[in-house]
Structure formats: C-alpha cells, structure tokens
Image 1 (cartoon, one colour):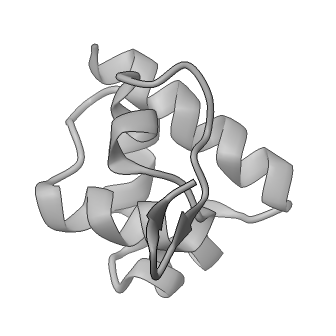
Image 2 (cartoon, rainbow, N blue to C red):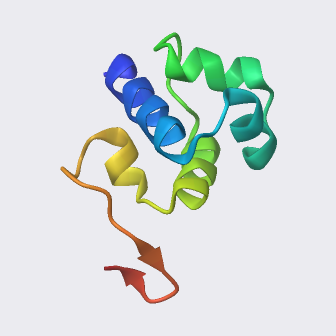
Length: 79
C-alpha cells in the first residue's frame, strides 16, 4: 500500500512539473521526507496527507487510493 500511495504522489508531482524539493517546501517538510513517502519507505502522516491534498487540489481519499479519480476540493466540499 505504501508504494501505491508513493506512486500517486509521484504522478501528481509529474503532472504539476514539481520537484520533491519544491513539494517539500510547499508542505513544510524536508525533501527527504517527501522522497521516503514517494519511494514507499514510509506512509505519509495524516498532516502530510492533508497538506498534499491542498497542494494537489485532490482528496486525501484519492491519495490513499480510496477513490478512482481525483476529486476537486472547494470550500463547499468535494465536487
């Protein structure tokens, strides 16, 4: 499961043209923490998942593979 979550993060970074360094800066974490999550060494923390969802404008469920496609989050909830 860790590798699937990491693959989703990698795909989202690739779509945005974002490096792991830039992603780490955007979520307030070191690049090495991002890299360990992307490479399936560790699962992202709840805090990290929330920050990733904000950066990628998707749901935490999508990052965890609980939804088949990205869901846009607005102030009114998932759409």
